[in-house]
Amino acid sequence: MPNESKPPVVAGLLLAAGGGRRLGGRPKALLVHRGRPLVEHAVRVLREGGCGPVHVVLGASAELVRERADLTGCFLVDNPAWEEGMGSSLRAGLRSLAATEADAALVSLVDQPGIGAAAVARIRRAYDSRDALAAAAYGGERGHPVLFGAHRWKDVATSAVGDRGARSYLKAHEWALALVECGDVAEAYDIDTPQDLPRLE
Image 1 (cartoon, rainbow, N blue to C red):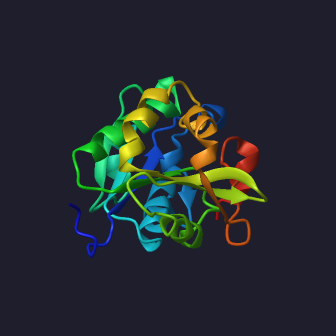
Image 2: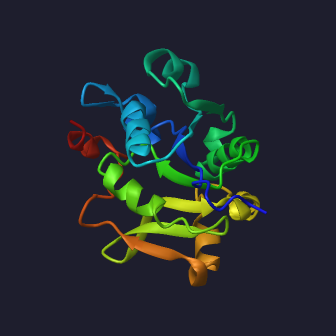
Image 3: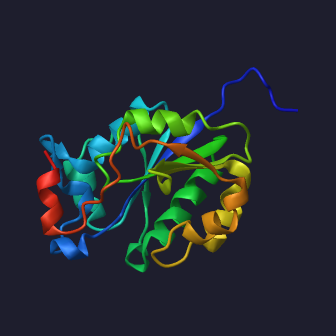
């Protein structure tokens, strides 16, 4: 019987393996934002939003990211199959979390600096059990971060293929998905192309 008085452990799972193909091969984790690598900013957002521990999935230029970014206190997960797409990173991250006592994973993407701690905290508060399923919404449209209770991890990982991540799982489980509007506290843009770089500070 679980200890109901014990606060849930909602781990942060940061997908930061992308190689920035449309950015000329610059790994997204090392793009500079506010004077530091983007991956550091994304980790701080998860922590300030109430998530811990934080697992970071690395792929492109993983050794360089380890050298240049201060990821002290994070669990670093190498995804050698990162070129297969986001699905492989999600699988690697959930595998690493399966060895922990986390009750849920709050998944965020390294290339969305417009999503801050306020949005993370809202999604984290949507946790209600190890069956929890919640996602941020922007004007009613589903986006990131996404929260998966631990009971869902195995099925999420099975469905995570190619670059779709958890999209097919979320679509199949729309009936159980809690959408949490975050458009008033966050902007869900991606840093994908050189035209997006001015959004970094």
